[in-house]
Image (cartoon, rainbow, N blue to C red):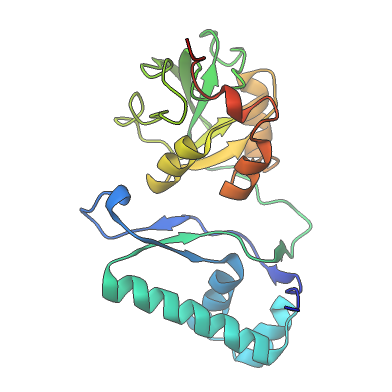
Length: 239
């Protein structure tokens, strides 16, 4: 029987979750997953120059375990550089060490939120990303808003193209109530983070986002919502 990994402590999540070779579409690349504990080990050992003994203590693992984590991280980065693969940083048996959630206070970010009707910050959030009639782009610091028509609201199952209407926008994140795996992967490949929100209005979403209270959606959590009144509505009904 394989021993389960103990929970490894990390200081936070990376600023960017995807790195890829320039000039090659994400759909044409092979992706490697660098786990969050591997990312933390790289930061401690290679960036901050800590000895393995100290770094292992900070992550609450043994020194041999830390050695295996950093070796795996180095191998994945070498493979990505040598063979031109992309890296996605996510997952792993980790827990953030700080009791204070990381917030986005003071950051100017462009957030996309699916809405039913454009009423600025008072717009009602549409719980299903792909079939929303409108997207609202919000500057989190200026609190300015701009609505964009979702040209891909009517689509067959599994064919959601989230960037069809958003490709010309500079987006840092999308907040959704539910999203299909295909749409999630396309957004993540474009370097756009996706967060889960259950708030009624855009104003409430932005408030929770800036306070660091929204969870980032991963392929694992997206799958968990499939068939529970969210993911399966992320497309137009079949005729």
